Amino acid sequence: MLDISGLDAGYGDLQILYDVDLTIEDGGFVAIVGPNGAGKSTLMKSVFGLTTTMGGAVRFNGTDITNLSPDQIIRHSISYVPQVDNVFPPLTVMENLRMGAFILDEVPADRLEMVFNRFPILRERKDQKAHTMSGGQRQMLAMGRALMLDPDLLLLDEPSAGLAPDLVDEMFDRIDAINDAGTAVMMVEQNAKEALRRSERGYVLSQGRNRYEDDSDILLGDEEVRREFLGG
Image (cartoon, rainbow, N blue to C red; front, side):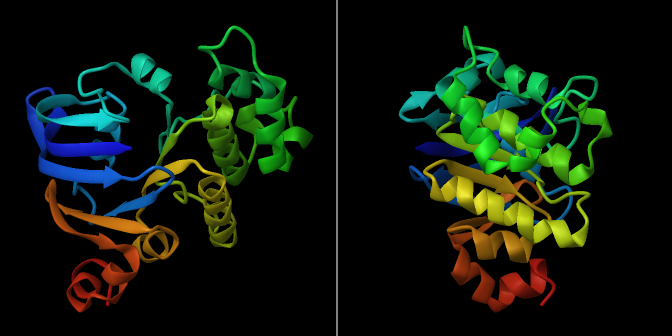
């Protein structure tokens, strides 16, 4: 489904990624882990057209999307949930969800119902302003909005960031359910052990380069990976 090959990318003249490769199969679940500053979020932003590409290619379902803008990429059935600023605070839950379907002439009722079934709290709070919601509720709203277009690939940047510890497992469970329903997931996550436990395949970035890649359970059991990146 997604094929990143030899990607060099960054911001303006500042290069962050060097010759990075990554693939995601149809319906797959890939975790990208590594230390702070490794280029994880930059890689995700590169898929969504938010960086400067200096070399290499990003292909999705056989189409080269390397130099497309975000508003073009979203039409290829890719949705992105950034780590911060991922909801419209002054808008209600319903208005945020409708914004997620902005490329459509009208919001399909079944799409809205699907999101409410996946995140029941959003149905209860549909008239509530986003800025009055808790961090966990805002994160569910951000994911719900991203699902309004029923994407083939969902990009999640640090979905557990800022959540209370008792909400982290619940958030990962919800991501599992989204993937189980057929949506491929590419997730950047600082909680590396949990990300690898949940995903099928993992990529470890270091200093903007591929350091390790393998099935997630193999990476979890690799002594060198555990010592260098997973805290033993």
